[in-house]
Length: 153
Length: 153
Length: 153
Length: 153
Image 1 (cartoon, rainbow over the protein chains, first blue to last red):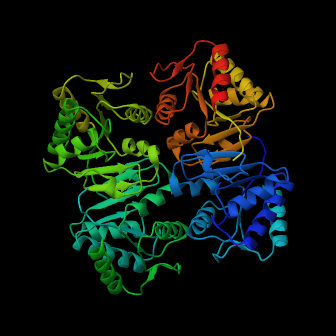
Image 2 (tube, helix red, strand yellow; image 1 turned 135 degrees about the vertical axis):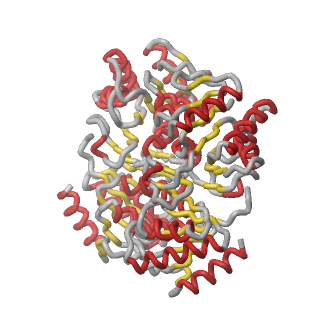
Image 3 (cartoon, rainbow over the protein chains, first blue to last red; image 1 turned 180 degrees about the vertical axis):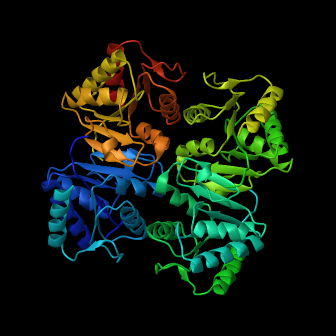
């Protein structure tokens, strides 16, 4: 397999403007680091992160719960429609070398859980305070950690 | 479909003696209420709960992550080997009318998350304090709630 | 795990009266042999086989493609709603010690394929003539083979 | 979602030299048409097709049955480790606008079945003669059909 690094961004299907800006900035940084962005392919955090990556020359993959590629947001290059419903959350996490968690609901919590089971680093900017994640408070901290973690992979 | 009520018991693949006793007691009560017990089919909480149900004439189903029926603990009547790995956690939750959560690790947390996404009642005796679950402190409280919830189904 | 034998009956979601009668007769024989009947839980062959089993005191499991237990036909004791869509076809096959194939379309063909991959015996009363299956022409032949195969398990 | 066309190449995990050459040639043509190649990510037909695409500037995605990205063959740009076992066969098919089938065993047959259920065109260079597929005899015929089908998408 090629040596591409993959970062999954997880978070709510809807999000505040502020969270959207953070997601977009994280996406931008993932693209600038030359990593592939994976997400759940839908709206909110997933769309904002994909937008940030696409606007900066990145490659984006959306692993969708439904059957149709057209469910994907407009910034997804490669849509993987799984038809698995929420069981697809495991795939979003498994595809990644590291995960960046942004605010979200129980779906995000399930993805954080799977990431920790699979022993993937979770850089945590989300509302879920779960032990085992790497809690950060700023985009800058998150980006520095992404850089550090990518070097170890 | 027949009108059988289904209760899923979730919790760690390993557990303390004390947690095992609680799981067994919950399983016993599920059987006495005439409900079917579903679990992940492996050890720890899953085995103790299935034991409690079997010893009281109940029917037990184990939805396994692996490919082999023989992975199931000895108290499982019907083993469903999924070969889906941890994506099977969604099935354990979807099969149920209500969920009883006992102590466990991130797998248990993922199941609590899915239960809340699917809007299933979660009677929570676990170490995870997640809003949306019904937190209880004693077996008695849990059993009373199970009875109450089953009436509404 | 308990020593229950499991037989999966696969075939179309719609079927002719004649195929329905064969499915029902197979279901009846599965119940009489004390085996658990697994199927996809929906109509046609699945419903007729489950009916035959239920009317003869058998236990029936329906592994459903959708999210809702209520999708199951009325003869299913234990409904497992997977939400996996057609990926659930792998589970119908994996759960079984042996498979009886009745007429069906491409879904049935996918299940025959998986059964052969998993090296499960396929007693083939279907329209698909696939090498590796055990082709039979009558219910009697099928039932004799079921008995013989169960002894080897 | 971007307007990328996706073609899945299915076939055996092992293959003859001759089949490998055909797979490589199909992969080359997929790349030249600007489409993304999806496959199961492993050896045989999957590896030869991915090689043909990569050597001609294409983008390749491998949807793997196992848990590890490192299971992917060396010509896969984006590895999606599903951990779903053979249930991943549904994903290989769902991701595509059209499918090219090369010689393979029962796994290939399951993928042809799913493609027909999902009403995707199957350009069939395989050993399986299944009604509903578009049977062709030469690479040239296959490539002409790929071009024609892509125009309709």
